Length: 193
Image (cartoon, rainbow, N blue to C red):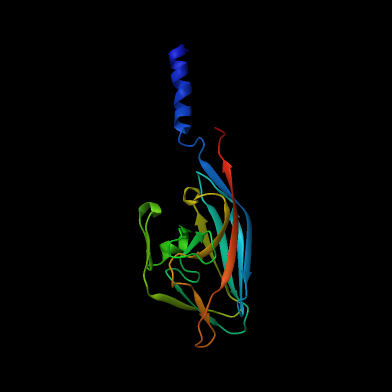
């Protein structure tokens, strides 16, 4: 092989990686949930810990009715959790940046509109109300893309839009589906610079 051919053949694959060199990737290292829901159980399972260039990190949230009767759940956009986001505080202000968590359930409803690429998301303001029967549970997957994470640290899962928290009722008294879900996220370098 001639020297120029060898150099060209060696440089092209490395040039193809140049966009990946030094890109920060993230890993969810811990999840913790606190809740005091009446007759409902909420759990989180880490499905994919790493938010890499190739794929997002993923969580599975499960809501279970532990009562002996149906409980109605009201949410906006996607049932039963709604449209969720990552924030640096459990009670973010209006000006706080909220990183959208994407869900396959957004694609199955006509209440959420996501543009191509996910840079814009809107929600129909009409609530979705459905019963969760006694002993029944529902699980939804939420994904966190690494290029959406501002940096490593402690984050909380919150509703994406103010005033659209999910609610539940066994009668006509609607209560907020209150929980505090914390994620610890660590940065990791793909390749050292």
